Image 1 (cartoon, rainbow, N blue to C red):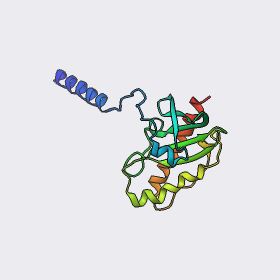
Image 2 (image 1 turned 180 degrees about the vertical axis):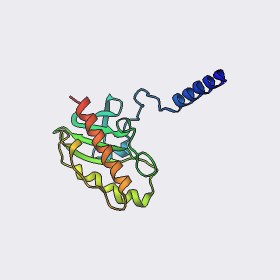
Image 3 (image 1 turned 90 degrees about the vertical axis):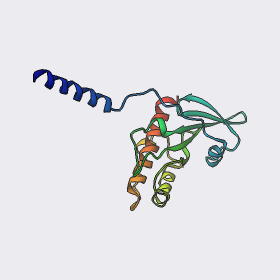
Image 4 (image 1 turned 60 degrees about the horizontal axis):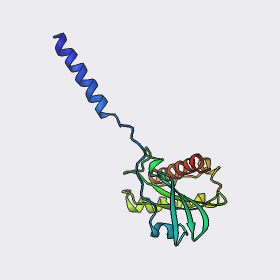
Amino acid sequence: MKTQKLFFEILLFCLTFLALPQQTAAQTVEAPTAHQLSKLGLKGATCRQITPGIWSVKVGNKQMGHVVNSTNFAKEVVGYKGRTPVLVYVNKAKKVQKVITLSNVETPNFFNAAAPVVNKWNGVSAKKGPSHQVDAVSGATYSSKALIANVQAALNAYNKYVK
């Protein structure tokens, strides 16, 4: 009887351990595409990775700033149906120039209502961006809160990794 109880306790422990999310190294995120860079106002830009998820961008020989993909930095952030990553372009003056949303699985009608929330960071300094207060969109609360958290996480990463 004691052996059977011990067996089940060990089994329960093992199952619990296996069910826990595992810490992994930073996920490799592809560099922004030419289309994404164009949407950010960086047509013809080239990227050089600083750290996984952050790139220095130039147009010709002119340094333009940095682009941050929130995917690596907001892994726990989800909207109503899943993750809602963004690309944040911080210009060389260290101000948010533009934010665009990336592919996601949110319900299109709700996500489209929430997506304009990312424009609230345009012109905000990268240093103040993580604490910039933005209201969620009524009727698309999950998606808009997730987008807000993604922008904040991207800007926290920018402040941490870009010197």
